[in-house]
Image 1 (tube, helix red, strand yellow):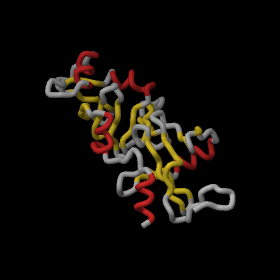
Image 2 (cartoon, rainbow, N blue to C red):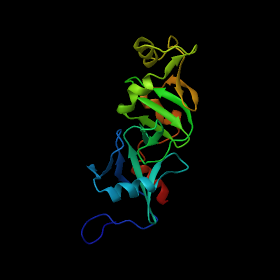
Image 3 (cartoon, rainbow, N blue to C red):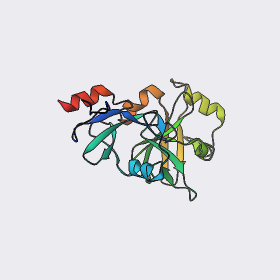
Image 4 (tube, rainbow, N blue to C red):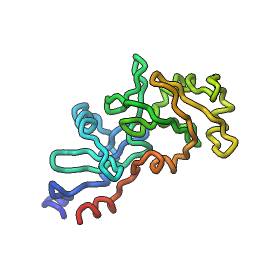
Length: 194
C-alpha cells in the first residue's frame, strides 16, 4: 500500500519492519541514517520495548516499529559512579550472567535484557574477572575461554551485586541464549498482519 507520493503508508495497527536499526554501539538508525536529533533519540529510547516473542520494537503512537539489532538489544555503559547503564539511560538491574564471544565481545544478561558492554568499559570490567578461587586472571585464561570447548576455564565476573558466571557464547548463539530476535524482518511483520 502506498500513498499519493509513492511512499509506503501503513495502517495505524500494522507493524512496520525494515526501517529502524540499533547498531552494536547503541546508535539508532532510520533507513541506515544515524538519528542525530536529541528529542528523536529520547523518544526512541523511551518507547523501546521487547514483545512476547523476543522482538524489540518502538511504540510510536498506535504504530509498532520493529528494530533490527546489529548485536544485542542494549549497549551497556559504565557510569561515573560505577553503575551499569543501558544506552537508553535505564539502569540494567541485576546482572544474571556474562557471555564472552569468539571476538572478545562481552555481553551481560541483565534484568533489563541482554546488553553488549561498550568498549570504553571493557578494561575496567576485565580487572573484575576472577577464577573459581577468586584470583585475577590473565589474557591467557580469557583467550582460552573465547575458544570455548571442554578446556575452557571456569571464570566469574565480580560486580558490586556479586559474582556472575562468565561463559563462552558464540555471537550466533547469543540470541537463543538470551531470548531475543536480532532481525525481525518482513516475515515477522507479515505474520502479525494476518
